[in-house]
Image 1: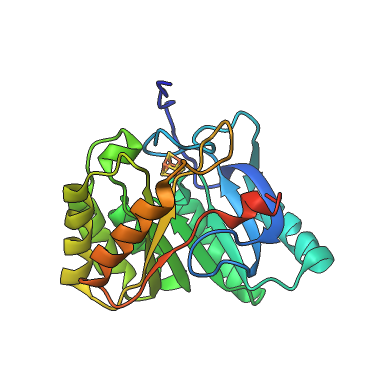
Image 2: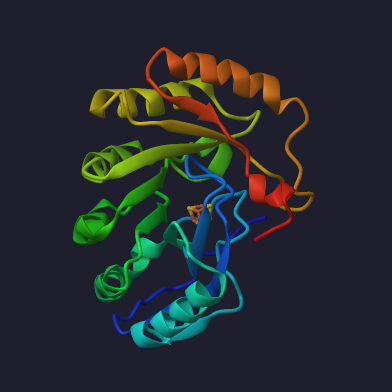
Length: 243
Ligand code: SF4
């Protein structure tokens, strides 16, 4: 399905927020932890497998309104290991984040940023406030987008000031040469940056591709030749039937 990118003009005082919820982190290195998620609407790209790209329902919230929701949810369902800023692409809202994150820190929250790993100029503006960064590397054979290796390289060089891991979504269509390029980028920056390989989940059936396990296993072996820590972790929250 062709996804049309909507014109997007973020304001610094309001953000389009699709969801604020408490759940278990289902992806990446922090899988299984309790996180309070703030989902920002809209993205700078449109991955073929995305179910969050352009949520229809959202609210324009000021920092004060969002902090009120976060504080009440944290009181009711916390404590949380992190407030997870997710999307969409939260870095589309850099000016807003520069007001929001210091408030969150003042309230004692740790910040987990989930990002597509492309908008490196925007990351520069907020990286000092982040505690943990989950950065995607997008492979064109899976996303249907162009490649972003230059942007990913610039992004990871900045992100590595903090705790960071790279996540690559894979399918049976993943081209080995693209995967090797991604490994080259990460290993040239720092071989100890952890890599999580996430098999794509079908948007309609919510199932993994039949036979993906074997391909995934072979790609873990390839990646282990370049990097110290490589893990294959599917989206576990879908199995747990939670958000
Ligand atoms: S970067 Fe993430 S939010 Fe944006 S389109 Fe891709 S999967 Fe969706």
